[in-house]
Amino acid sequence: MEKVTAIYFSPTGNSKKYVTLLAEKIALPFDTLDFTKKENRKNDVVFSKEDIVLFSAPVYAGRLPNINLFDNVKGNGACAVCMVTYGNREYDDALLELKNICEQKGFQVVAAAAFIGEHTYSEYVGADRPNEKDIIKIEELSKYIQNGISKGVFEGDKLEVKGNENYCEHKAIPIIPQPNEKCSQCGSCVRKCPVGAIDGNTFLTDSTKCISCFACVKGCTKKAREVKENGMYSKLVEMLETNLRYVEKEAEIFLLK
Image (cartoon, rainbow, N blue to C red; front, side):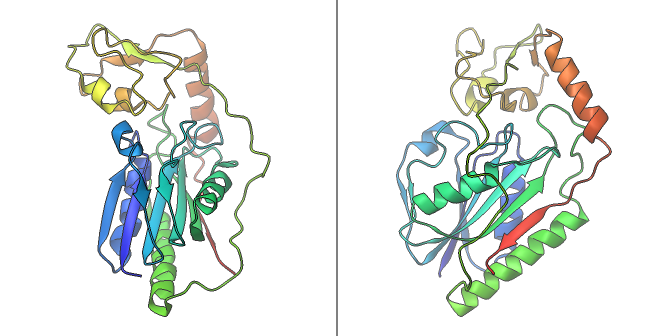
């Protein structure tokens, strides 16, 4: 095994942060592929048995983003590590979904992990992650991968992770950011949107395309994008912060046995 590639979809930075930390700790050269950019998801990406590929994506309502995220990736026997990040609630079926996709694409999934990051809708829920315990988990995972590399093989039966094979339903979240009076029409939001949901002339968001990832909100330095309040969004944030702000869940890793 000669090379590590980190592939991530990371609208607000959590998934990129964790997968980069892991890649840096593995004693091999590594490349990154940013699948947050829509154009990067269109190209065929082909690997071989000499590769180790680290996949990382966020959890939205218990599932992976509903955008056919890794359709053009082919494993051809390459080893894969699956990682999801979530905002301190639950990751439900997302990690299992990612593992199954990778196996269907021809990868041998040798490890998986679920990490906590700042919640998409609250700066207080899942704040200050990764913490020291997360780093310990990253180091444990990297040592396992390095050991497998040194042996030239990862030993064990098929990897088992948490999740239900009858995945929970993809839920459309009607939380659609729009420009406010601070908008200078700089176009930053258009460039950051991973699904092309923002009109380049009006800067309005197409609700049929938006995945409520908040890349445009958190990436706008002028704070010029927000959810037009209908009561539901503020109630959701209040519920999240009441129930999860002071809860510190631990990362989980899954290895071959």
